[in-house]
Image 1 (cartoon, rainbow, N blue to C red):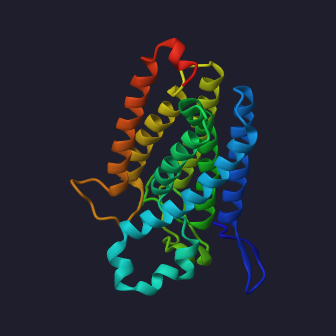
Image 2: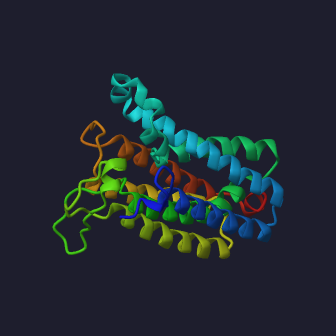
Length: 263
């Protein structure tokens, strides 16, 4: 749609990058707001948000390389190409690496694990929503052909050059599907957090609900991943995170109240 927010010839400001930055700031604001209610140390939480963002970017790129390993090995120069540096990468790869780092950081700094994960869940969802709006602006992560009235057509030549999105073809607006769902999910998680549930339930709800949605939306999303058992790599990851979310929900709901308050 509008991949370049500002274009000065040899320099341009990508709309995707701007919206990701807005999403990061919105997520940071929401996480800090919830952390103050617990309360948790503001400096430690802010640092964790920043570290997770950086780790998430690295994980997203790493999984992008792994998913398209043969293509990158056929053209090693693509590892450091401009298009690769501008690519968003694989969200779930970034999420998993950031989650692993977060658990390490939380344990190291003596923060309550489940409660800290809970305060992050709404912020992750709202940040992801803005990120998907950025994808829509850039043209990446586009859907398959669609004959519904809500189909979108990309017309910007820069979007095609940067992401390969087909022009003048009616497509599923998968980016908007995800943006809308994540906004609703952020609101639901915020409401759930305010009800003071057992620690771990908010994060478990995020893992479970997003995994279900992501598994479903993959059926109308264009990708070049090789299928395994009829499913994409992303769908297999979604099934794994769904199982993890359901297991965490079961664990949290069965915590004795005296343990849950200190979790």
